[in-house]
Image (cartoon, rainbow, N blue to C red; front, side, top):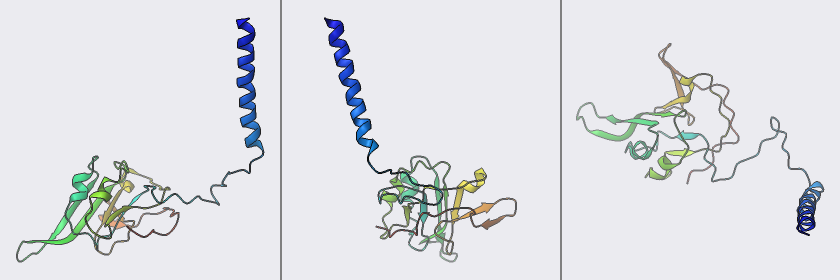
Length: 169
């Protein structure tokens, strides 16, 4: 008798599985043809970090809040008085170390935030040096890469942006 109960229970579970499959068989496809079509992520998505040197006050809270120590910055200093100015001289972010936790964005006291996550989920790096982004006054929001061989900054190439930079909150 227990054998027949087990067979009936297994048949019922099999029928339930087939019913789920049958329901999804007639729903429309949700496949996206990736290279030509791209999904726009939700607003809470944490993609690559962007930085705005003009709004940064060089407080260093983002570097202190970072658990992976991927952020380094240096504030400007007045040459005559040796006082620190509320502007950033340079800002460096190592995307290879970043775990995209968002603590740097939460720690930033400026409004709008000077460091924030973009909606970009595509990034191309050809070497380890390409993962380190640098910012100074006048650099673009995506930053520049320092080339140690040429001892100069260069723009990152082959970076694909999902959409324009969203408004900062």
